[in-house]
Length: 168
Image (cartoon, rainbow, N blue to C red; front, side, top):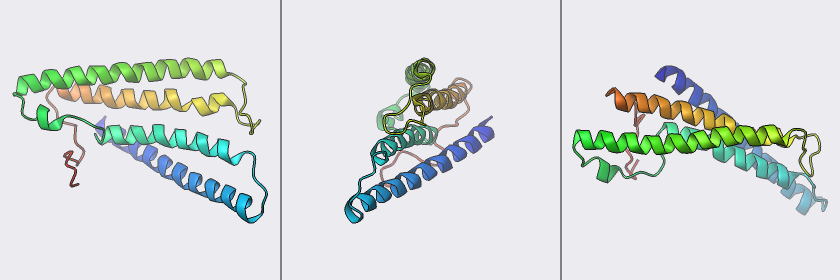
């Protein structure tokens, strides 16, 4: 399962790279039209905003997998093994709760958007845009469930090559 999850996250990482490259191109395109051609594009700002939201959420999946989010490793690493396990389980349960909310209510929002369209891009459905919420929520749930199994059964699947040190 860990190998599959690693490959899936690698795909998400490449998707985030493509989103970033696309975002840079669209913003440069918009700047070129505005300042060189003196003709502002009506759609580029909205589209760039959507891409930034997508980049943020997909980047969160990658950061969570590699455990690059903020944590209290200095304190937790000093705990006795049993206390550390309890703290790790409690923390992962809190994270799982948030991710379930993101997944479930993202799904509800995406369904409710139906045929609504973006303001300046009438061919783009808002449900396509908001689909990032249940997709990333589901991916984050998968990562956390895998991590929780590792915590409960003593397998360390945590760091993925990063110790949490600011020097790395």
